Length: 61
Ligand code: FES
Image (cartoon, rainbow, N blue to C red; front, side, top):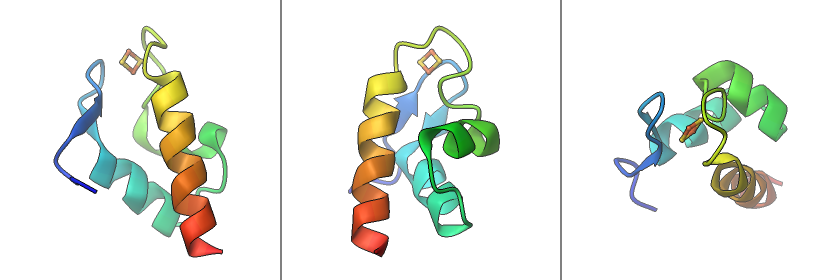
């Protein structure tokens, strides 16, 4: 995973930011959104952020 890759341009949230949010206890898209703001703007990134969150949670389990 490229941590520097921006997944939500609206708030300049990177994949690394999402990974850190999950590491710090976010266990759903909603919580990742709360922690990183990803998905709070136009909403275009929602699918991608959801998918990445799911992937990260599966890895963690
Ligand atoms: S790209 Fe994430 S809210 Fe717009």
